[in-house]
Image (cartoon, rainbow, N blue to C red; front, side):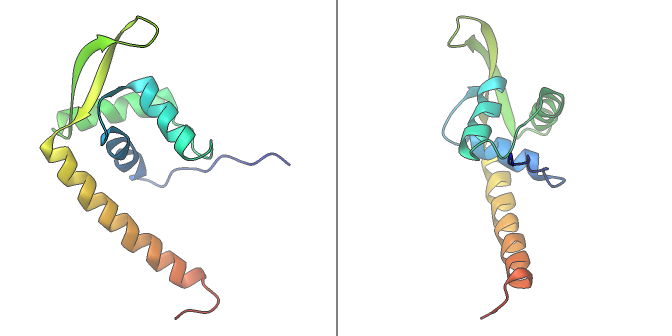
Length: 112
């Protein structure tokens, strides 16, 4: 039986994109591929979700972009984190870890 794709929880996409950009700039397709590869294809980010999220994060000052050339010699926007974006990422990761721990405690049959 094929593995089903996991649905993103509301508000998770921004955190995933910010985390993806932490090591350095990527174009939109690179962001989507990094998330797919890192999650072993459990998460697939559709263009219809990714690009509006990138534009929204740029408007909020969490990321910036500049034009560059992709691996296949095409002009593309490369997105990178700003200082404000790094701070937002830290906050979101902390919140996510608390949330995941709380859910794990509920699901755990033998809580400590």
